[in-house]
Image (tube, rainbow over all chains, first blue to last red):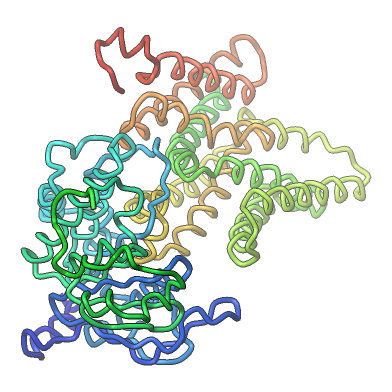
Length: 275
Length: 275
């Protein structure tokens, strides 16, 4: 298993608790001649839940693409589990990714099982076929997100919340250390949002995952994140949710008032959805 | 008809083509490449014209030309930021115009040309059958070996990219496999009708089941029965074989629509609410 060497080295060579899984330093990204991200620096410590907030078009998705190595920064350095983006290319099966919206044909003839098995593709490897262990891993992931019993259901027939959970299972169905989630609760009603977030936090604890959760919804993240970063092209804030929420800079980033958030902080209600 | 050598060659060749087309048809349907198939097959006219005018085996020139056009469709639509259908509209008309120009420059009205437009399965030699078998085997091998990557790419390209699936290779590979399939199928039904073989078997399968394995099996069954029935009907009634095969496929498709489990009356008949 030479493929896992770099990641194994990373986890053996550093002390638990002090591992920095993702490190971005002074990252600048331009797309079609336009600067999308400007001087971004932050790090993700092991087992941390980092919320990235910012208005639409702030460059949040771009940031995730930089972490994944799909976009190379014009300036600055990116290290993920100690690897450069070029090295990471062969270790992407340690990262679970959930894109903003999976735009798929609802008639696409795949079941929940098939979709989750897709997540396993990078573990199985090119020119290889799924083995028993892969099949078990798929069923485990489906069970973890509470979709057991629905594995044979065509994914187009699931409700919005169930689909999100299927995609979460797909992101977990590998040797996941890091979970990158891009607006995973977008389009869900409040109870489904709540349910998804609680499931996510539970799985994060159970599997010891480190999470970057991107959202434009400060409210949702303030309740669940350990730390928050607020970006709008450039970094406006980095701190604990309470610090971020109370800051004038948040208004600056969003260019609007955030009075309705006062008092939510990190201790906000975890149930109900009527606030 | 199987008593004659030409009949046997037609049947063997036809069955190989049916198997290849039905398999790739699945990806044509789920990835919505029907128009790409149309584009490639019509562009083959340009390639055939080159062969006829230059005195080279038109299948070889058409093969090269189709692969080029398929690559062109992919390249232009990825790099030129144009929609696939726009690029196809441009390339296939230009390639056909080029073919017409070449033929008119050569000042020969070639009867041979008609056989490429409408197919000439009964005129196949054993060498043709062997070439066809080898090319089909290459296409099927590609589809089998990269199946999990292809299905991931077809379902959700963004996550496939983020998971380290070589999407560019898979995309171009699929386009080239389509080009090769088109070229080997020209003998059976001709340039004008070949796109039917790329679309109808998969479309028939998708009407009857929501499981990709089932879709592929039904697609294979539809294509094989259409070729067998088409060849027997055409020899029995002395009618054009290519057109007969396509019309049998169409009849199968109509039946699949009528008996699709998604039709309320079919669902009622079998006592189930969903297909």
